[in-house]
Amino acid sequence: MKRRVLGNGGPEVSALGLGCMGMSDFYGKGDEKESIAVIHRALDLGMNFLDTADAYGLGANEELVGRAIKDRRDEVVLATKFGIKRDASGSRTVENSPEYIRAACDASLRRLGIDHIDLYYMHRRNPDVPVEESVGAMAELVAAGKVRHLGLSEVSAETLRRASAVHPIAALQSEYSLFARDVEEEIRPVARELDIALVAYSPISRGFLTGTLPPAAELPDDDVRKRMPRNVGENAEHNAALAAEVRKIADAAGVTAAQLALAWVLAQGDDVVPIPGTKRLKYLEENAAAAGITLTAGQLDALAAAVPADAVRGARYPDMSEIGH
Image 1 (cartoon, one colour):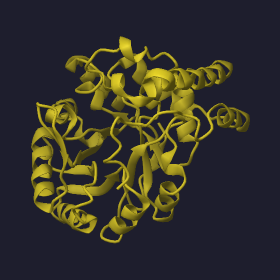
Image 2: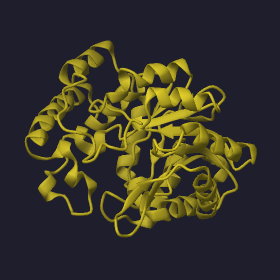
Image 3: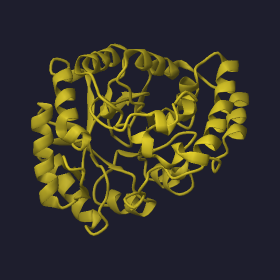
Image 4: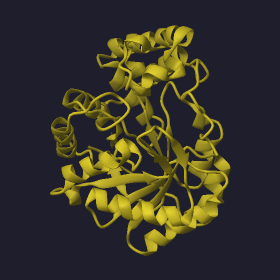
């Protein structure tokens, strides 16, 4: 698989990465045996960029990924995150203090069974903590050899500037897809100015873009999409019609809607790396094939007409209060 470089002097990663979150959390029950098989197959296909976080499965996802890569560590560019504190009761806070960052890094290293993290993200930002203090603590982890490169997730253009003045930032991870274009107006131009790559999570919009996602009422209670504003009521009907247009373009191109959606993200620039998540071998291989698709100008124009940047209805999350600080 083709490679892309994250930022100036950052790691070289596969053009498509693998999001591992759903293997342990948010999308129903997982199967560890199949999840490990998916990770191994991804590496076999040249997808060397794996993404996890300490918040996924309350640490269980890092443990799973650690077991999967135990004998293949040198094949992997591994990204994990700190900053979202969750507990079994469902409570959630955002913590960015230097003391917490140091402890969180050590805990992630233990769960993953590794001696360094290739890319360490601040998962969400608490605006009560100056970003300079947080990135300063992250930079200390680089100096200590525990972390190779730094990243931020879902932050504003101003925060990117302030953070990069403290230490080089290799990547900004934000939601980006045909259905989520928030970063295009202000954030992506600043990221490009600062030579920060955009790592696009949910590039198929959590399955919405396939046009096959069941109505919210039919999803299990432990599937987070059941409560997504974009998948409820009139929003769901409107957005399903948009997804149907995407599927028509995909059918005409002889690819799946998911592959078309991924190819669109890849076409947005060599500094953009989508990390579609899956826990099924079938979908992993379908996604991987998208890296070989080059969209024509006509197809890109058709997608622009089918899904204008402001066409999707509904917020990305039920609570957007922690996004974009």
